Image (cartoon, rainbow, N blue to C red; front, side, top):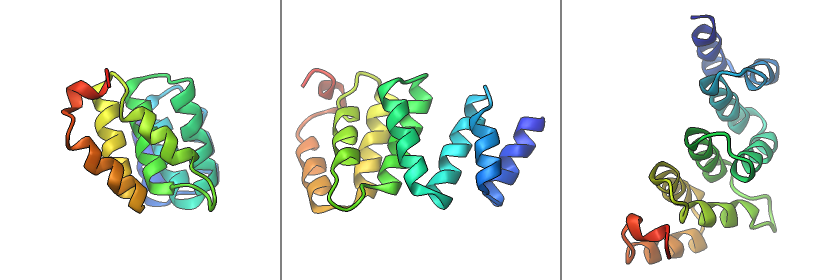
Amino acid sequence: VRADVERTFLRREPTAARAEAAWRSSDEASRIAALEAWAAIDPVRARDEAFGLLVAPPSRTMRAAAALVLGRTKDLPGERRALEALLVAAREPTVRVRLAAVRALGEYGSAEARSLLEALLDHPLEELATA
């Protein structure tokens, strides 16, 4: 119950201290809440943590959350790191992560992300893992 209350406060009133405490938790839902809070209050931190989750993923749920955060926080000017990570995630074998990556590409909002999504229309999600 305590973790649920802490996540509620983090979502309603995100602060760096609350996000840091949730991130140190072993509770996956708390870690995801921290990532989402950082997306709102510290996008650079959120993006960095999301990249780490995609490289050394603890679970499908965390990888999916990381992809969604990358779609929200996008790349820094002149970078393509988030976009490239989302392209890789869109071809991962786990459907949950692929769907999150497709949603994130839609939220990313660039012309390049749009053209990549249009290209994905020609490939059912089941085929993307082997494409």
